[in-house]
Amino acid sequence: MTLPSIVSVPLGERSYKILIQPGLLTRLGERVSGLGVRGKAAVVTDRHVARHYLDGILRMLKKCSIDAVPVILPPGEQSKTLSTVKRILDVLASHRFERSSFLFALGGGVVGDLAGFAAAIYQRGIPFVQIPTTLIAQSDSSVGGKTGVDHRLGKNLIGAFYQPKEVWIDPLTLRTLPRREWVAGLAEVIKYGVIADAEFFSFLEREISDLSKRQPDIIGAAVKRSCEIKAEVVGADERESDRRRILNYGHTIGHALETLGGYESLVHGEAVGIGMVQEADLACFLGICDRSVVSRIRDIVRCAGLRDRMPSWPSGKVWKAMLHDKKVSGGQVVGVWPERIGRVRMMSIDEQTFCHWHMGTREADSRKRSSARGRSMGKGGLP
Ligand SMILES: NC(=O)c1ccc[n+]([C@@H]2O[C@H](COP(=O)([O-])OP(=O)(O)OC[C@H]3O[C@@H](n4cnc5c(N)ncnc54)[C@H](O)[C@@H]3O)[C@@H](O)[C@H]2O)c1
Ligand SMILES: [Zn+2]
Image 1 (tube, rainbow, N blue to C red):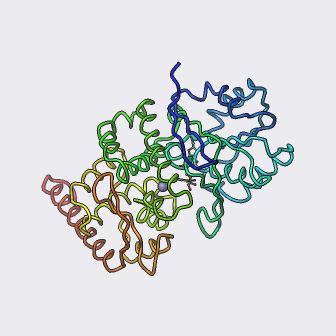
Image 2 (cartoon, rainbow, N blue to C red; image 1 turned 90 degrees about the vertical axis):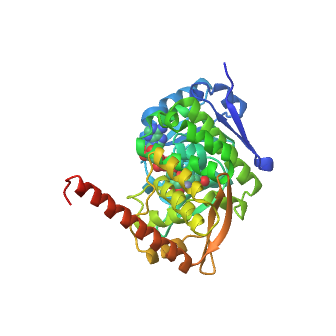
């Protein structure tokens, strides 16, 4: 039997391992005893994920003599609130969980953030294991120890840094992921290539079609490299001062588009896809990279099935939305700009520069649209 790939997250005494292997969820018995799980345990999940994977996990725990309590939450970002955390804490307290009891987070980023936060605060911290089941959770949110919930006044406003004991990734779980969630996750994977690894970016360019067919080995390789890069970045800088900021590439414009669209019209990864292309274009405008960098990023984003064009918001509105983000210093926005594939630079820009670039792209877009209209009319199409 082949062994799982392992990525180590180096955080001193809070270091942990990420295990990655297609089929891993069917052979977890050894890991459970290896981690010292005994006594009480709970599996926090959501309704969609429970339908596919909860019984298997409960059966596996049962084989290890653990009668785990399932906590099944409504799916989606609307559940990421303090009242859902209270619901989890109520279950733990009513079953008299102790400091050594384990919590398993089975699901996407929402479940991971919620369950991780509940684990961080119940009796000042109980051990928890992440079993991520979305591409975002496998390549991003299960690494780095950020846990928490949203507040009426802001996303992820309440939370704690709290590391899991281990992360168990089974790429086969991604087969049941809805297409939109899958494609959105690809944006974050592509991001790692741009910010830190040109070779990984070339691998993605070569394999994007097999990756899009969700071939487990290709997913495994892409998830592993993504985790390695994130682990290296957060290991160097656990509490987000400078180095960790490179992970925000694509997110400065991306977050603004998410906010302006009201979170429903673009899901996070879709906004990041557009953000990566547009931030590369802006970097080219600033003279930081050449046009070929923009083309490569645009091409792979499109091949992944993501959009690359800015929705047509006025420049001032986009700028204001960017200012609301936390990467702001003295009225300027600190962005992450590609110098070339595999290397980024942080630099602030001001409103005038941003609006100058943005108005230029809007004009270019509308010229392209009207010449496309002209061509289709020339072919006898309707105006
Ligand atoms: N902690 C971090 O560092 C970090 C990083 C990135 C994102 N996040 C957070 O993660 C959240 C987004 O995560 P997400 O995109 O995974 O969303 P999600 O957890 O809402 O999952 C998306 C949808 O897919 C369903 N689903 C999950 N796995 C499935 C599977 N294998 N098969 C079928 N359906 C499945 C879920 O029920 C849900 O409906 C946001 O709240 C974001 O803030 C956190
Ligand atoms: Zn993101």
